Each structure stands twice: as C-alpha cells, then as structure tokens.
Length: 123
Image (cartoon, rainbow, N blue to C red; front, side, top):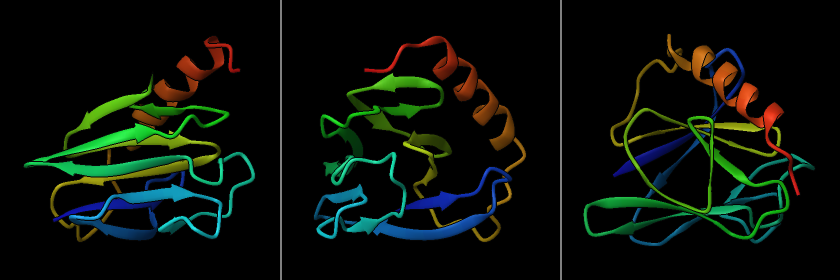
C-alpha cells in the first residue's frame, strides 16, 4: 500500500489517501477520488494506478500539467519520496506510511519545481 499526501509549502500534511488496486483520481471535480479545492486543478487532473508492484502517475490531459520533482510529466513511474505539483497543490508520494511529514528536503524540491515552472511556458 502506498500513500499520497497533500502537503503545505512547509511540508506539513493536509490530508492523505491510500492507493490500492483501483486507480486514484486526483482533481477538483466531485467525481475525483481525492477531491482538492484548487481552481488551478482540472476536474480530473492526474491518476495513480498500480501496475504490478509499481505505481504509475498519469496526467489526464490537464490544463496546467503535472510535475514530479520539478519536471513536467505525462506519465511517470513513482518512487517513494517524490514530490508532485499540480495546479497550486503539492503532494508527497510514499510507498510506506510516514508518521511525521515534515520532510527536510521538501522545500528544496519545491523551490526546484518552482524554478523549472517559471522557465517553462504553460499551455
């Protein structure tokens, strides 16, 4: 079981969802499994699906894109401790539950992601 955490800019947890056999859809639409109040997110922004032992993030043709560790992705094999940015929201993926989610490297990853996003035109 893996966990997707929504986090604040300081790395503190807002909410979390377990990933399982069924894909987890993240977005601002009522049909999303992980509903996020963020106008910059698409109704169905991205999903995380299991493929064997792996977890795959797939962008669902979102307007503003999905970023993993500062790089824009359309699909990405997730590893533990990766930072996902979608809209104005931040997420932390872990393959195991995390007791305290204040991650020392989170701010560095966020700053790196922001720097890449500032240099990359969005469509």
